[in-house]
Amino acid sequence: MIDSVLLALFLPCLGMSAVFMVYMCLLWYATTHRPQVALPSKPSPEKGLSASQLEKMPRVTGKELLMGSECAVCLDEIENEQPARLVPGCNHGFHVECADTWLSRHPMCPVCRAKLDPQLLNPCENPC
Image (tube, rainbow, N blue to C red; front, side):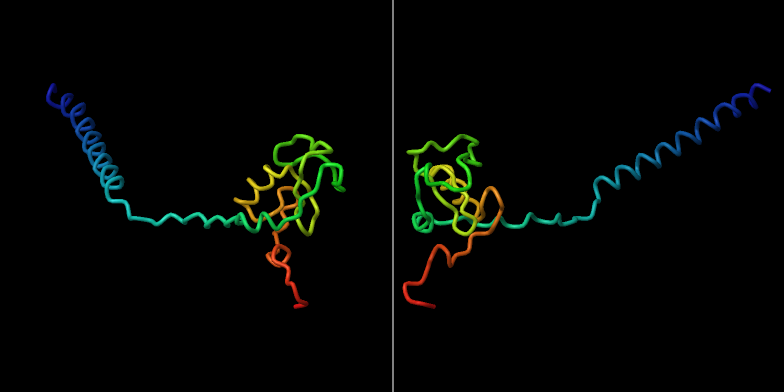
């Protein structure tokens, strides 16, 4: 009778231990033998404007701005006598330093995200 009680308690423990060991082996195998999946790479960021292209962009003073006097890059007011840079095409204005920093990294207007057309920066001398 004692033998049957011990077997009744021992066999379920032995079975659960075997199931646990199989689970641990499968878990180990799954973590160490993963297929090498190539993660999608980030698209290469667009290159900004060169220093020579930035110099070709129009410069005005703060009082000549038509579309407002707040610089969207630094969120500060462009004073009347401060130099400002206009983005060709959309005519948004920014502090010269702010615009040059932004446009050297991103070839688009910080306000409307309009792409800068290289032909606006390199106009032909003769009619094209």
